Structure formats: C-alpha cells, structure tokens
Length: 117
Image (tube, rainbow, N blue to C red; front, side, top):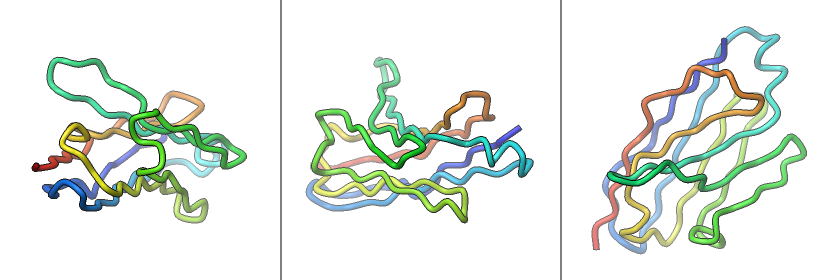
C-alpha cells in the first residue's frame, strides 16, 4: 500500500510564499500505478475541499480561489508532488492533505498552513 506524507507547512504572512511537499512511498508496483495527485484543504467547520489535481498527463486543474497563485508540480523520480503557494491569503489557512489516483493510499496527517494578515 502506498503511504503519503505531507510536509512544508508553517506560518506565513499574507502575500508570502510556501511550498508543500507530498511524498509517496510503498511497493514499486503500487507506485508505478500512480496516475494523479490531489491537494486538499480542510478548515475548521468546513468540508475538505479540493485545491488542485494533476492527472497522469501532467494537466492540472485548480480551484478558482487559488488559480494563478498556486502551482502543483511533481517529480516522478522522487514520487513526490509539490504545491507552491504564492501570494497567500488568510483564507488559505488550513490543513493541507494530498492524495493520489487511483485511490487506496494510506493518507498522511496533513500539514498546517497558517496565513497571518
């Protein structure tokens, strides 16, 4: 089973930048089936929302709230995805989780991002 670990969160001022990482590990045959990457955000009292998704072709879709500010990228050799967050806003605050497609990975505990105004 693939295991996911998020990192890179922290406290950042509005307008600043932060880069999150999502590392996938596990059996090689499982990692070879990895086709897509998700980044989600969860805030207190709200449902988890999709921030960005990259498919196997490398095409990314973004939530309108983060489009033109966030960039999802991947390093296939490292089985790692990144979320570069630029010009962050207080409403970007939350716990960020990653996931993969196809589903079935053991998810991580997320990484906390706090944006101060």
